Length: 224
Image 1 (tube, one colour):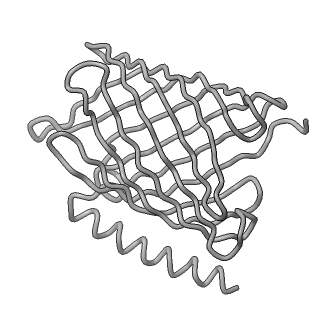
Image 2 (cartoon, rainbow, N blue to C red; image 1 turned 60 degrees about the vertical axis):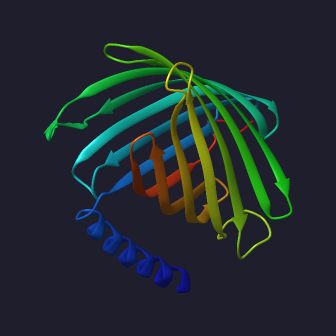
Image 3 (tube, rainbow, N blue to C red; image 1 turned 60 degrees about the horizontal axis):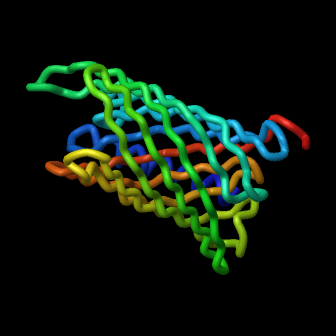
């Protein structure tokens, strides 16, 4: 009962933040991430991100990403080949425009654990097929999860989450953007968790904040 009271308070606070976001230069991203075992070594990655210029309703970007990964070691050192579809609706001279991007990406994820500190390193290379251009980009993410009320990331665990991700183009300009993120999360059960937090994105000529809500699903598709 205490958890549901705290959840209700958090939702009310988040609603206030989103109302504030609609009146200021603060966006909101709603994200689903799936990473589901399809065999002992293979996993199916799937995600949907619905990104808004404000709290809700003014679409900035719709991102759909999927791929198949292979575990080099159990629950760690995963390589993945994937595809992404990105629909963007930026404002150009005050008017909405629309861009579609198809993206192929390769990534490697490795994890480390130091006491309560759960570290993740993600290295990703992207081939970006834009409507009138082709670009390549490298990304490196350093992520951290720290359980609060348990020593491990067990069911019903509250935790802190943070990451920093840098994007580098393979042509000029080299620097693309940098993202810094902090959030609170809750482990629902061994296969599901949820996070709510804030991400600041720094680009060459602008700096913008995003409220983020993410749901993570690791339910396996196989019993093996």
